[in-house]
Image: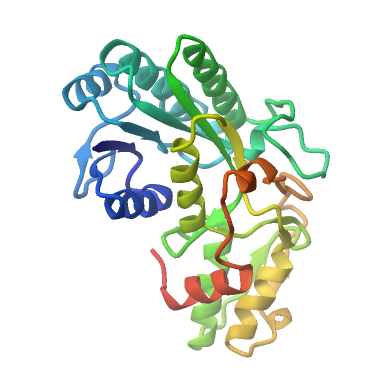
Length: 293
């Protein structure tokens, strides 16, 4: 069997690739960056359709995106997420209708009242990123109505040592390691009482594989359902080196958080058989000991 992963160079693509190989699949990776995969853009219909027509993969995973809500990347997100989704789905319809397709969504695209979010909750186009995600969902539902097997997993925060310091959890880990090595730097952050999930990306990849291999559930949130504060994460990372975080962390009120809490209700995913295997404590240890990008 064959699988195509668009966005293989990211953390989700990296962990998913290993899971697919463990299940004896031939993996065809695609990324815009240089590496041991096919270089190309999911926003290019001719490229996507030729790839699908040639390989007729059993599975296709659309993980490509610039995971930021900044308005400045609205066109990039539209091309990669929205147009990319359409390119994959139309190519599958025309050339490989038996393929199962996974489209990544986000917990950020839902109305957030502070309560645990399910896949049944309504959407809210609250930022440029959410606009693209919402559009890709409606496109997926349309093509599903035409008989294609399209799955959507709404990701909540998940991390690994493959993150860059552009992501706050890795920024904290990298800074703490430098401080433990003698650096005098101060970590400047926004509201450290903001709460979110701290799921290991490998667990998220396992959820993707579980979802696409069932024939009854086609959309689900993918998250642990357990929220912790940024302060909790800071404490864990500094405690690893037996350091007092309050000496090295400065809060800046000008850094505005996108939410006070973002947490899922993964009841549907758990009914499918998914279990979180890595706690926040384990994740901190893994990210510290594996270094990072």
